Length: 468
Ligand SMILES: CC(C)(COP(=O)(O)OP(=O)(O)OC[C@H]1O[C@@H](n2cnc3c(N)ncnc32)[C@H](O)[C@@H]1OP(=O)(O)O)[C@@H](O)C(=O)NCCC(=O)NCCS
Image (cartoon, rainbow, N blue to C red):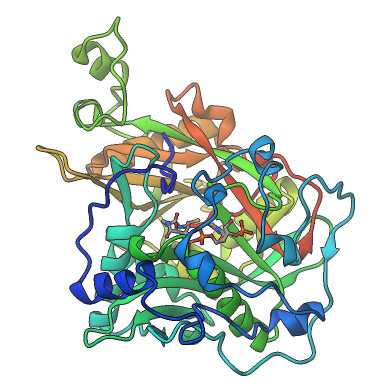
């Protein structure tokens, strides 16, 4: 099962937002505010400068009665072509159905970028989040813990720990102004939405490197969904990124938008059968007892790759070179990391990221590399269980080693950390060993997108980029 946002589900809201927020929402829904008094999220978009024409204004009507087409998010191309993309059709992205055979930027870099933030409804205000401040990190954690990505049945919600968020948002050259919050203009100044960007150098196809950002953690609290908040967040982060002279972005979503560079799939390897069955993530096949299942998913107690050990600071140069060569030779979309980037993303951090190298006992050379990060899911309203402890496959380079054996070792190491399930995308070479290692295929795609960059569609195994 893939965790996806599930706003298509017309279930009752479960979160108890502050009274103040309810109040704001009531005002909007009862139309007590006149359109001229409050033009919600109406903006003077920098996109006007970008595209040389004004975008259709977002009106009060959008906030009061969202188009029914928003209720069911398209997941596939077939569903997408029936939908009107009011916002995305105006953006420099590959159009739905457009045949792309070349690589390169869609629009030229902009000379003039607005220095003014996108205008928002007077009940809200922009807020740069200082994630180094424990209280603000707490706020971000709570926003995501209550509102971020859920599965379609609303049984599970991704729960990024605070150390994980801090790691994800502060790589080398990170910028505080790219941690963009939207707060309610009330006494509590409640954080109601967020979006982030972190810098990345990408290589796409045969082109040389391009400075870009990875967009992540787009989240809008339930009370103000379907009211164009996502649009203003995306426009504001775009403006802030443009201000730094960067015009290309990469992002992923379960939703089908114009147009994915690749559509990948999560696979799941159960480690703790009892818990995974009890929470309803994994079904117990009718022909199997729990005991049979536990037997089927058992793993050896110890790893078997000779020379496998945790990554240390002095390994980083060699491990980076192994990873770089692999990504360059095997994939068409991948990050190009500096040594500092590599150290940030891979040096082990307890409870956050675990990386290992294979060191040849004879030559002492580094012949393999693998890593995973820890991202738990909350189990929503379960009488017994509160969370699923999950490890996500990050980057694995078998090098001279056997990929199946190395990946099995990854499962063993994760199990030692009390992980309940290992999740992985069918990117790079991962898909080659999933079936043999008893991974089950998830039920939805994760689409990869490039903003302002054209690339022919790419098969998952040629994607060398993993988002947190
Ligand atoms: C996804 C989410 C941010 C959308 O917020 P929203 O303000 O309700 O968005 P709206 O429904 O008003 O949609 C506005 C536009 O954003 C687009 N959009 C929706 N989800 C998007 C996503 N994940 N990435 C980029 N654009 C997205 C919509 O397609 C729409 O554009 P269109 O008119 O061109 O179709 C919100 O539902 C949410 O926080 N969900 C839970 C967390 C989540 O799934 N985050 C995304 C992780 S990839």
